[in-house]
Image (cartoon, rainbow over all chains, first blue to last red; front, side):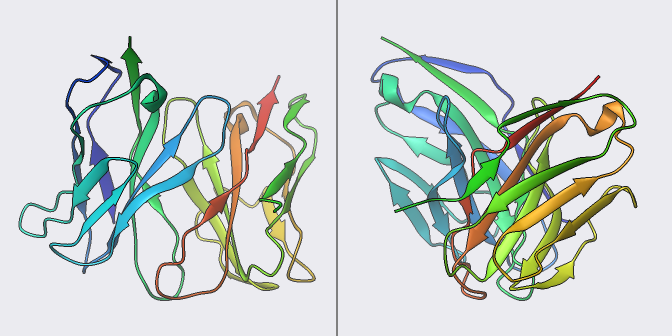
Length: 113
Length: 115
């Protein structure tokens, strides 16, 4: 079946450091890919998405590029802030019928000042 | 505007009791999803509604789990004869329509603890 594997955490970085959270997927066909974020005390919210190969999703300084050849969708940010501390989930879904999301296990990110 | 609302936020029940969890989706949203999130894990799909029709219930772990959305708006997830392994956060999400990967809007979840 379809699955998502993401970098295990927790990840702790200093403010203004560079961030990469790895995500790879296994799927039959060509899914859409997502990063969701869960800030402390809040619900899951969409951070960015890409719907086809070579698309780049971006939001709030975060970026991820859909790489079909490596089945990857790594999340990157050039300079993290304390406010980026959260749990990040990589996910996939298909654009037909049931658009259920298949999630990775999540990566907890803590940014220290 | 109002987001997806779930109630109760926390539920504690004794093993063997029945529980009902409620989801109020964003008004007018066609699609509604339920997910189960165990501690330290990502959410896992349980079931999907398009309006009042339950189109996929393949993720429901056993026949003790039952979901409904009778008028195509509010949804209820019911768990009968609860077991300790049912302890998890139950998330509801809704999206405006089907197709084109509409973003799913999540509620804050119901944290269920079975003693």
